[in-house]
Image (cartoon, rainbow, N blue to C red; front, side, top):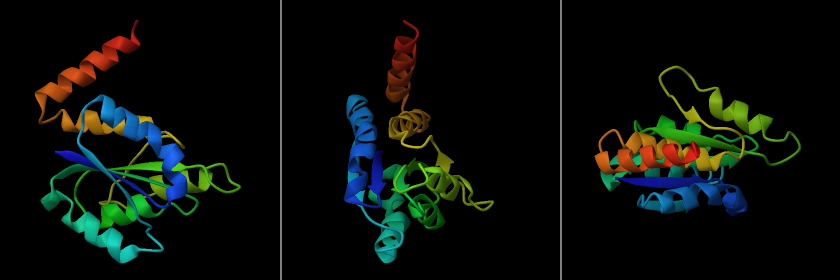
Length: 148
C-alpha cells in the first residue's frame, strides 16, 4: 500500500519534507499532492473518496492556519488520516493544531505535533506494519536504533 502526502499549499513543502524523507528511508511508496480544503474542495473530496480504490493505505495531511485539510479528507475517506498542523501565521500553529485535533466523534484524525511531519511518516509506517511484516521489521529496527 502507498501513502498520500497532501498539503494545503506549496508553501507547506519545507515543513512536510521531513515526512517525505522518512517515507523514502522506509521505502514506502508515496505520492505528494497540493490541494486545499478551501480553494479546491471538490478535488480534495474526489481524491479522498477514491483513495482506497487507488491503492492508498494512509493519508497524511499537512496544513496551517485554519487547517481543515485533514478533517475534509477524513470526511470523505475511512482510511487512517494523520494530520500535521503547520505553524503559519501569527498564532504559532496553535490554530492549526486545534483545527486538526478537534474532530467530531466518528470522523477521527490522528494528529502529530505542530510541524511534526516526520512523526506522521513514522506513524504511517507503524500502521502499514499491521499488514506488512517487513515494514514491522523496519519499524522495530528504527526504534532499536534510537536506544543506542
